[in-house]
Amino acid sequence: MKPLIRLFFRTVRLVLSPVMIMADRMTTPKGIVRTPQAQAAVEEATARLALYHFQSCPFCIKTRREMARLSLPIELRDAQHDAARREELLQGGGEVKVPCLRIEDDNGDTRWMYESERIIAYLHERFDAPETAPVT
Image 1 (cartoon, rainbow, N blue to C red):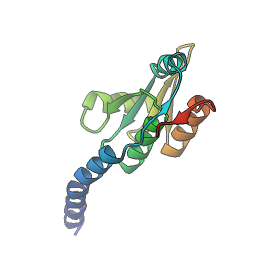
Image 2: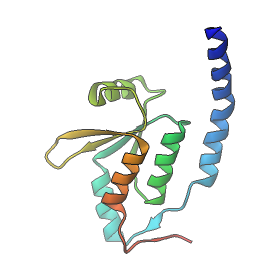
Image 3: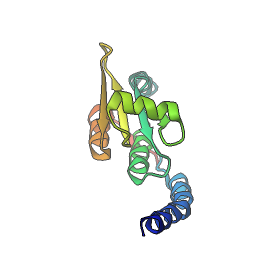
């Protein structure tokens, strides 16, 4: 019975994954517009961030969409298909669970943040400036 259940869920994932990826690409929100100086500061700050993700994970999609909305050029690291990235996630964060934001502090310390809601709250707290406005 277990093999049959596994086969069912693999089939569902095979069918839904491309649909989810295509829907995400077609409906990605436009980012906020900052002054060139403010965007340069954001880019400098995001250079020390990396998001470990799976391409079709709904929680990863939610996190990536918020990154797009906030115009954050955070490096994406595929922990599903890249064995080296998966191992980095396991060694650094302690478990292979996505999304996971790797945060390198100014003093060189590294923190690993799991859970899409926590990551999104952190990104808003750090990068959501009141002087920005959405692109229309």
